[in-house]
Image 1: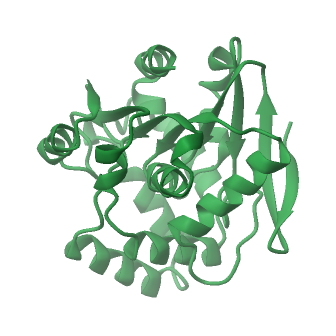
Image 2: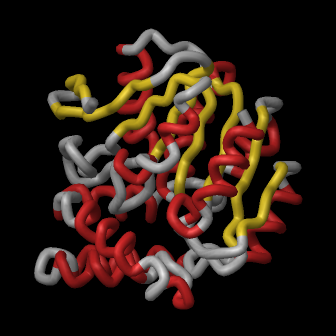
Length: 258
């Protein structure tokens, strides 16, 4: 059941199920807490699972027109403070990984482990920054078509027919993101800083989940990042949406990581 708190005059929606080691699951861009629906039942058997709708996504409201990774992290920190949780594991998908890194940057001693799922500690390339700028110019006039195209581009082309129904569900959830939330998150991602040092300098458990056919993140670059930052990594056979394309192995991987 979704609950909420007020953070800087905005509603932040979250869920809190199970007992045991706290695990914070952070969704990606154009997603919300529902992305974890197939993962949470298994993990919550032995752990306390907290999911949070990021600002401008799902049932959470926006704050202004730039949602920095630091601001996203503050909103999650506010939920954890409300729940009186002092140490926890972080699992972040895509944008959620950037937010997890920002949270770890602020409170490294509270982190028991950090898993970047189809994500990176690198900053945006200039090409990616330009794409985000163009998307924000287009989105006000063609929000629905742009969102649907963005969702389809997250899956490996071979899986578009295989996961047709799941992709339609992802599009439905993505369209719950407000235009303001879309633009504010894009601006935040575009301006985020490199956080290789979080992986390099901290002693908590670290893991990167890499999709071999990820259309968003370069496979070889992800492996090089893991090696450069002395971070453990696992390779999944499919694309960017591991919670859909590789559900069973993802559950096993997170369980083993915890």
